[in-house]
Structure formats: C-alpha cells, structure tokens
Length: 266
Image (cartoon, rainbow, N blue to C red; front, side, top):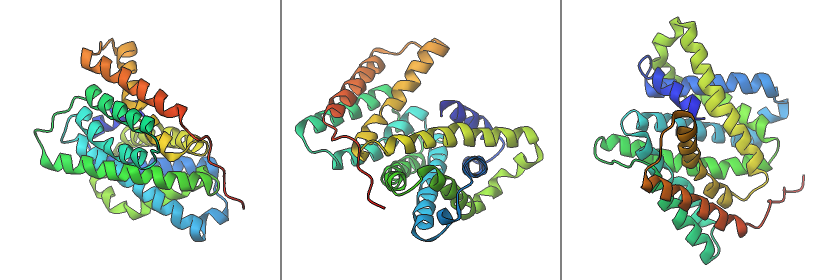
C-alpha cells in the first residue's frame, strides 16, 4: 500500500490526483477480473448492486484521499481520515474497555501523524470526505465479504467504479502517451488496491467490523516501522508514545472481540 502511494504521488506531476485515482481503479479492475474471472451470477441482481456500491464508495475514497494529500501533509490527512474507522468502532463498542481502547487508538494515531490543519480548507474537506468513505468501505466491505465470494465482488465492484467514474479519465491525458506511466498507474492499482483490499476481504470474513476498524490503526504504525527499518527514520518521542498507545488499544479491544461473524445460511 505504501509503495503504491509513493508511486501515486510521483504521478501527480503528469495527471490530476483524481485522474491518478481513476487509473488506479482501472488497473485494479483489469487485474482482478483477469485473476478472478467472476461468474455470471456475480454480474446480476443484488450481488451486482452491492458490489457496484462497494466499488464506487471505495474508488471514491481513493479519489478524495488523493485530492486531500495533494493539498495537505500526508500525516494530517491520515489523522483526519481515521475519523471514519473511529466512528465505526465506536458504534460497535459495547463495554468501557472498548471505549478506552478506542481513545488510546485515536490518540495514538494523532500523535503519530504530523497534524497541521493550517493550509488548504478544501484539503480538509477532502480528508473528511475520505473519512466518511472509509466508514462506508468498512460497512459495505463486511456485507460483501459475508454475502458471497468477496474477491469476485471486489472485481465486479471496481469494473462498475471504473465506468461510473470514467469522466475522471480526462485528467490522465498525458499518461496515455507514455507506456511507462501506464505501467506505473497499473502498478499503483496492484500495490494499493488489489493486494491490500483482497486481504481486507479475507480479514473481514473472520472479524466483526468494529474490531476491523480498530485494527486499521496499525496502518500508521506500520508506516513508522517501515520508515525506521528501511529509511532509518527515527521516530520522535510523540510518535513512539503514539505507537505504544495504538498497540495497547488494539490489544485491549481484541480481547473483547466476540469472534468470527457467522455467515448467513444460503
């Protein structure tokens, strides 16, 4: 995911952020359909509607996220965007321990992220839109995961999203003349969409959406660990404390999880 994000930012000089997000969606759709070859039933009725809604919400989340990071520091956007999972986790909390875990996780993410709201008001709007879309991604993703073959629906969803959001392709004009740029665009789709979202489907089949939302706080922690190991970026005291808070919150919340959600009959 982070390798894909790095490539995406590099492409912003050759296409609009929304255009890069659309190309990411296209690349993911092509790879997923070639890999999964969804059966005809996946393209019909309620499964198609659910998959399409999931795909559009997910692709829309990527669009507004890219527009946000084009205007605000990445850490600020990540902190604001995490409001979406926090709301989902709060809605699924049932005990005082859950709430304490959620407070630890939220505070940890803010401590890790480099939060600087000053700058672009539109960037803040895009980041909050990404938060709302992330909440929708979790809720719809859970339904997709337990309502059939989640990976097939993931493929169908991105095909629908590619078509629905096709006007954004107008922002990719320069890239179509460069095979290298197109390969990089598809690479973003594979790294930032196919691999992580396919893994999300596996996890969502086994966990409640509230616990899944809390586990998402490990993303900025992972980014910090990768930065330390690969780039020798030593975390500040605040970042180290934030990392410990996230890990503690995730561990605390995990103990109270009710276990895997049973799939509905049929």
